[in-house]
Every structure is written in C-alpha cells, then in structure tokens.
Picture 1: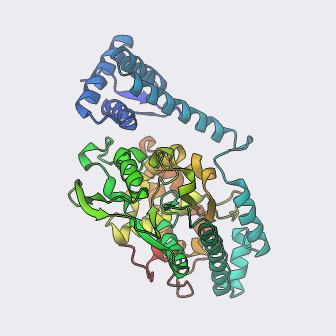
Picture 2: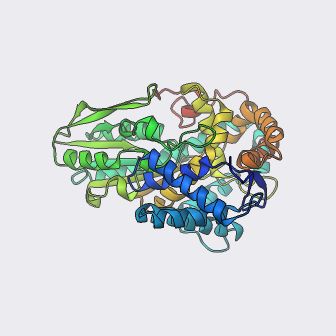
Picture 3: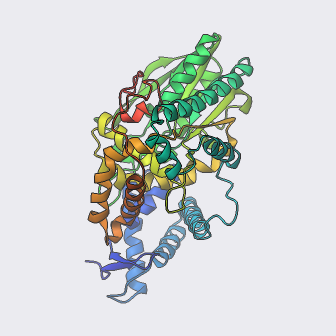
Length: 447
C-alpha cells in the first residue's frame, strides 16, 4: 500500500495517486529508444516508489515535477542513460509546449505552415467564409450547394498542383509519401492523387505501413487500459527502413501482415517489388518523421503533407481549431469502420495530440507540398451528428481532473456546433469528396 494517496497536477488540481503511471512513463521512454522490456520498466517503477517514500512523509501530496525528478534520478543511477535522456527530452519538450501555449503564440511557431495558412485565409475571406456568421448568412441565402462546390474546387486544384510537381520528378522518384496527422484525409487524397498520376503513365505500388506495427502486447498502455498506437515507435522502424532501401534498389522483400483482431504481426508474408517505371506509394501518419526513411536520399522521395487548415472564426473571436475538426472526423470514421464509439475517441485523443505535437507537426515544413484538406462547409454537417453528444460529455466530465482534456474539447465543440447552421442533407457533397471518408457514402473503398 503506497503512503501517497494523491498527486498534484501542474494545473493545481489534486488527483488520485497511481503508481502504475510511473512504470508506464518509463516504458514509453524505453520504447522511444527501441526497448520493450515491461518487466524492467515495472522494476524501475518500484525503485522510483521506494525513492519517493524515502524522500517524502506519509500523507504528502507530491507534484508531477517531484515525481519526474525521482524518475530521472532512478534511471540514471541504474544505468539507463539512453532512456533517461529520452525521458528528459520529452519532459523538456512538453514544458516548452506549455510555455508556448501560455504565450498565446506571441512568438512565431515554426511548426505552423504560415504561408499555407495565409493562402487559406485569403481564400476564405474572398469567398465570405472566414467566420461562422458569414457562413451562416450564405446558408440562409440558400448557397450551401455553392459553398460545397467552391470548397471542393479549392481542394482539387491543390491536388492538381501536387500531381504536376510529382510528374516533374518522375525520373528520379522511387517513393511518394502522403503524410499528416490523424484524420487529415490521407486515404482519399492518396487515391485521388494516384488516379491523376496513373493517367500520365506513372504506376504505383502501395505499401501498407500498418503491417509494420509491433504486437499489441508490446505497446504502451495507460491505467485505463488504453493502448498508444500514435507514436512512430509503435512501428518497426528498423524493418521499414530495411525494406525501403531494398525496394528502392529494385529488390524483392516480403512485407509482414498485421492481424488487428488478434493484435499480432506475422513476418515475411507478402512479396513486394518495384519494377521499371513503378513508384512506391506510402500513406502514413509518420511519413515525414526523419527516422521513417532516413537512408533514402531526398531526391528519391516526394513528401506530401495534409492538414485541414480551416480558417473560420467562431463567434467568440477565436478560430475553429484544426485538431477539433480531425477529432470529429475520426469519431465519425471510427464509429463506422472500427466499431469504436465516439466517446472512446474523445478519451483517446490526448494520445493523438501528444504524439503529433512531437512526431508529426514539427516536420510539416520539410514537405515538398502542403494540401489544405478542410472544407468550409464541414462543421455544419457535424452539428446534427454530434452536438447532443458533446453537450452530454461536457456535463459528464465537468469537474473530473483525470478527464480535463475531454471536458475542454467538449465545451469548445459544443459552443461551435451550437453557433453554426446545421445541415441534415449531405446530398450536395460529392461521393469523391475527402469528407466522404468520414461521413460515409464515399466512392472509394476505405476498408
């Protein structure tokens, strides 16, 4: 029985003390540097507890910072320098992100694609879609089908540009990587890009990156039993790099197969080879992550980055957050294709955000081209689908310090969805639209 009952978070709130979170944090740091020994993480977690109990009196409420100090000390003193370094770097990065958030972006953030945002805002202003009020007025004027047409056209023009850029480099390219954070529209965009390029004679061979997941039992898990699939370390990066090098050289490899129902990976299952004139097509969260394809020369890679960079101001004066759009998209998609309830997606989203802030967003400016996949009309379709649920979650998680992230997101989206004109009839949305990947009715197979 631990002598500590509670812990103080950085926000000042007091939550129940859970020793399992310590070993989980150590295991996560170990996974980041290639280690997957849960027993060792548990052993080190117990040593952290011993240090805490030797340092503080019974009934004391330790802070998160004090616990993290003990973790660092135990890792270093027990000869786990690499894990300690990763833990310290992660901690420092998190502190920097919190500091940046508190400054409200008074200092430019290099992770944000400012040039693309400016073009997106300029487009929104030109089409009178830069605010919820402006959008609502156009809907009341009967212009919803026209808004759909304008939004879809803007997206298609960007794909045309990306396709032309790829064709210009067709003689040197060995792989095209379509990357971006969760629910940015990678699947549909990849299919539409392939259609364009196939017409010009380019032939593509898809590489399904999900097959490189480690077995489920090797993934980090939290005290709620939720697995973290979002980090690049959830993938066997060493095997991916080995296969990419061999494929680029024209060799045959046998890619693994991942059984999601069983949570197991089976090695050397499917032969794959690039023949003359063929290019590898990769749709992955982590296509821009440096360790994903480090041995491949830049000249052989075209990196496309996707993000729904909606530029629409809500009535409270703040712009609708892109991460909230993607949260709703993933809720809708996972509820249909993965039997994953929207509330489960909400509660898992902090993992999504934590990983993309560290492993995806910092590299968006290394892309060869960025596509804004937002649709100016999409929030209006989400109102009838999820407004009631967000209002329910807001009440459910109010005052729960362990679910503060879910509560704040629910409040934010409930306010936005209440403010916008809801659209029940989605028939004006083309079946080829990137939004059909999430709301259903797509002409593409997203299984």
